[in-house]
Image 1: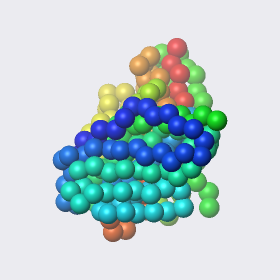
Image 2 (image 1 turned 90 degrees about the vertical axis):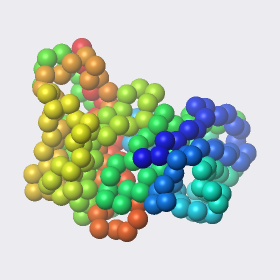
Image 3 (image 1 turned 120 degrees about the vertical axis):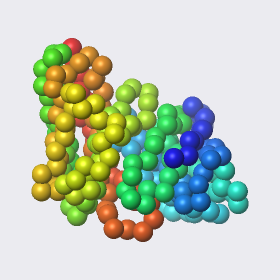
Length: 111
Length: 116
């Protein structure tokens, strides 16, 4: 399973766009990139998943360059409620194998 | 649709005592995972079930931890005897099997275990 590297923490203000970059130099051909969000005292929650180029849903966008060695989670116009830990995971999960969580990025949004 | 249900939410025990956690996955999800999460760390897999079969338990400390998933629905994770270092949050997750590509995992709220 590919190892990921992401910043330990980030700070932002309400209304700003936040971009969290994740490095995964050893990503394999079958691997997908998945991001989860975790609030205190809750389990992680799926945000977005992609294989290449760009994926957008109602809460975030995921940008993946052609070489797929990194990816960027983009949160538009963050609010205080976006304060959480964000995990970048890489894996094929074809057979339901569990993904490996790192320490994640703690995002703190201030007013 | 109900999410993943776990109980209890909190448990405090003394070391060397046994403890059990229960998980009811989302209806229809045949894959069930148990994770352990220490403070400031990401979740770490303990065991994964496909229906009632444990297909990945390489990270489960089998000398004191055990798990079962009878009938391929709900699951129980047990620790006997508990040690101080077992204090952590125990998360259960489930996913829908048989889908192509990576599976989205749905997590429960976790059980926070404190061993005194």
